[in-house]
Length: 80
Image (cartoon, one colour):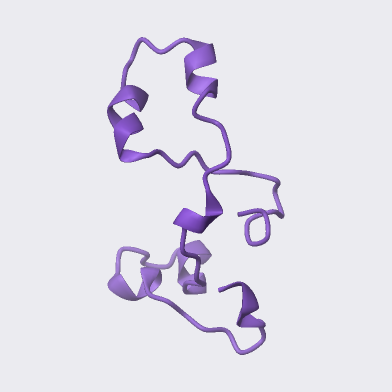
């Protein structure tokens, strides 16, 4: 994930189906919450670029083409 989402050194929490109901528990302790913050197996993920509309201020992002695969000629697509 760091290869494509590392500018801000952030990592999303990705839940397994087994952990979804646990995550929604309102009585989790800080320790229990932090236990979800671990790297997700990148072999179980698929990555591709999407339209820049998703981050365009004022754009209607509630449309199908925002989430569709979008190829940028200036990017080398070897990661995807």
